[in-house]
Length: 236
Image (cartoon, rainbow, N blue to C red; front, side, top):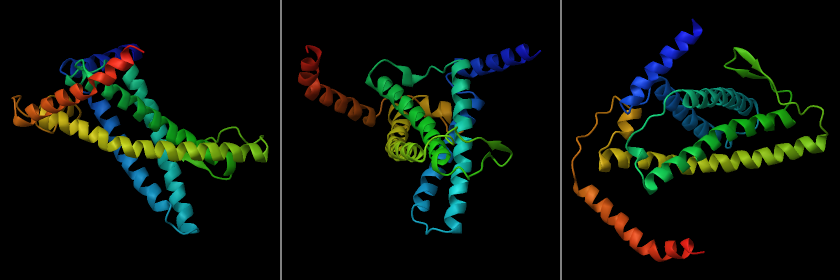
């Protein structure tokens, strides 16, 4: 019976994919993660400006709570992406934009995995008195660093903190790129990319506009200027 239920769920997801739209499950994952990312970035910035004390401790506890939730959600999202049919839309057209979109997604997933994992490592290394939970419903274990030497745990904390900051800055840099690309698909290309992830947003009628002509002219100009460099790299 469970096998049949899973099969029905994937058939239901395939129906959305065939129409070039993401399933409601993928949409909920996407926008929930987007909201949590924006919250964590703003909350992390505020924490760095909070005076030590009870208020800072409470702020860190909420940061940990949301971080554990994000790790569980990103695992769920990757699992859904692996088993549910992939959506084919206008972002998959051959060309540099499709390559850039795939690179952007890989960077996002690296950040979404790396940030909670590095935070988990920091807490597990030097704040082992902290009690992590999943939404205060179930305990979340610390990583097994307790038997390591004091110096080793502080070294882990230092590396994890460096990774945490680097991934956070990378994520902050990727957000405007991702948003800009989505708006470009909707406003200039007038395709189905943003509508597929945000169905309440009406899809604009497909027609040639002056913005498309200007974009194509810019692409041709950039391609012309970079042609000598691309030739040199090709023959190396």
